Image 1 (cartoon, helix red, strand yellow):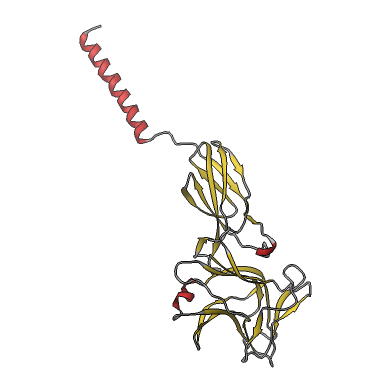
Image 2: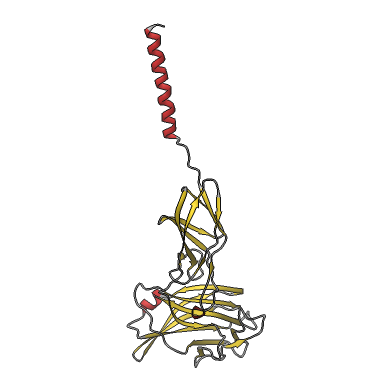
Length: 289
């Protein structure tokens, strides 16, 4: 074999080796993901915390404290991790019932578990979470006790009562009901007791199950000395099925001028196209930390 042929063969082999090495750099082998699947997240509550009704729509998933993403449930989530790792799932909600306003709910405890992640395999988990220990239940109304902690205002021409009609009750034995007609076309009620609520960055939410064929206005009365400020929060849309909503009160509370305390109010005005408005409430909770 001539020296020239040997050198040409050597350089050609080196060229091919370099080319294939470059290809591996440009197109590296893709990692095989492992998967977790979550159908739903459930809520467990104590007697003091009230109903376990919830509307957890999303899972915010972390692996070793690194955010993987927020996923609408049910979801199968790919993870570029293998072996045993700490997986954290934080329950997410639609704030004010708006799909574009999705957030981790600050009062639910995250689900944390050591999970063996196996490439190209799906591990199904359906977490059950709780309220976290620092949640303050400022007010609860489930309409199961003898009285109701809501009262009609002087301008309201109808009242809020309890119903035991199975077709109208969300859960338990009773729900709250407001009946309206042509002669009773304006409803307004507020909490009997005022509440001292935190100002600033502390989260404050109003949770509620509802069913209504009229819009419901939700607001706060802010009391400062002898002054009363009327603060509208939002309108709840009509729904012919029971729904759960989480209403963020932070910005409304912070807009009040030197408030001493607050009352929650609800208001409904009969529209001309609804002959017999029917508004149903259940499991109202005012929570903060």
